[in-house]
Length: 89
Picture (cartoon, rainbow, N blue to C red):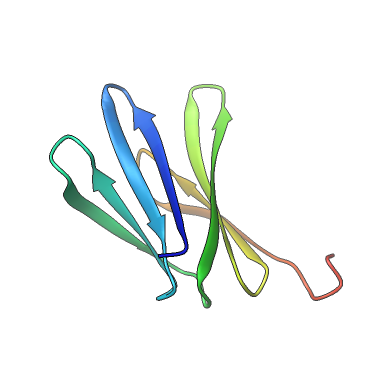
């Protein structure tokens, strides 16, 4: 595990973990139960951040190769992938 991040939807607190195995795992903290694995990165997930836009909540994730992914936190679906090259652009 490289990164841990907690967030709240309604009255439920979740924990997201970004890992060396290229996955993000979501846990329900009421009973520490596993909810879902988010897949799509091709390298270890090193950063997680909460993004709010109006009433919508998103999870931003970044991997070691410079790929950023945006996930809808309610549906847990992948919304967008942004790939940065080695020059930062």
